[in-house]
Length: 396
Image 1: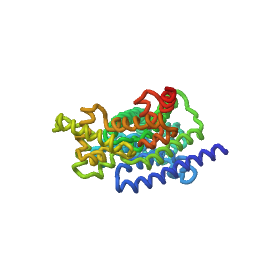
Image 2: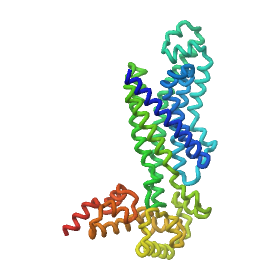
Image 3: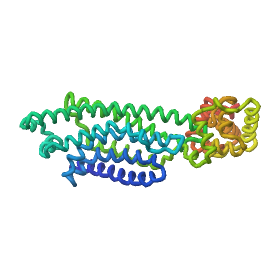
Image 4: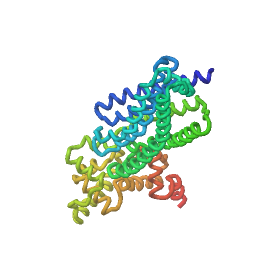
C-alpha cells in the first residue's frame, strides 16, 4: 500500500513539473518559437503517464487518454528533434509547413483514435480498461473484424515507434556533432551553448528505449512483463526533471548571431557553413590578418576574455569575421576555439610553473569558464594534465 502511494506521489510530481515547465516554455515561445516543440514534447509525455491520476480523480477520461497515448507516443521524438534543430540553428528558427511531415505518423495514430471512438462505449471500456478481449466473441462479425484490425495496426505502430525513436535519436546525435564543430568557429568558450545535457539525456533515453522495445516485444509475443512501478516512476521523474530544468536553461547557441546587424549575420552564417570558395581573401590580406590576430592575443591579451567570440575579435581588429575565420582555417590551420585556447594554455603553463595558484584559479585567470573544459583543452594541447605538467616542470 505504501509503495502504491509513493508511486502515485511520483506520478503527480512528474505531472506537476510538466505543467509548470510547459507553461514557462509556451510563454517563452512568444519571443522564440524554438521552445514550443519542447513544450509539445512534455505535453505528449504527460498524456502517456497520467493514467494513475485519471483513475483516481477523473475515471471517465481514462479511455480517451488511453487512446490518445498512441499519437502522443509518436509526437515525442519529432518534437524533441525540432527543439534540438531550433537551438542549433544558425538563423532564428521558425515552425513552417515543411515540418508537418514529422507529424505524419502521429496523424495516423489520431485516425486510429477516431475510429476507436466510433466503437460502442461498453466495448471500448472492456478492451482498454478491463483488458477483456473475450467480449469480442459476442459481437457481430463485421465489428469484431474491425476491432481486430485496429488492434493489429496499433500493435504494429507501437513496434514502429521504436524504429521512429531510434531514427530521431541518431539524427539528434549527428546534428549535435555538427553543431559543436560550428560553435568552435565562432566562440572561444562553448560550455553554455553545447547542450551536453542533451547527449547525456539521449544516452539515458537510448537505454530506456532499448529496454522498452525489448519489453514490448516480449510482452506481446511471449508473456507479460512485470516492472517495479516505483522504479519506473522514479526513472520517468528524473528524465522529466532533466528535460524541464535544462530545457528552460538552454538558449539557442547562435543567439548572438540573431542580435547582430544584417551584414554581420550574413558573414557569420557563411562561417557556419564554411563557404570560403567565393572569398576575395588573397595571400597578402591573409598575412595582414595573421599579424593583427597575433597582436590581439600577444599584446592586447584578448584571450583572457572568457566571453570572447569571433564577432568581438572582428570588431577589435576592424576586420570581417568571415575573413578571420577563413584565415584561421586555411592559413593557420585551426578553428577559432583552438586558436584562442592555445594562448590560454600557454598562459596557464607559465602560471603552473611559477605560481602556487590552484588549477581552478589558473583556469579562471586565463579565460576558461570551467575547470573541466580547461583540463580537456590542456591535455589536448600537452598530452598531460595540468597537475602532471606542474610536477614535471618543478622537478626539472
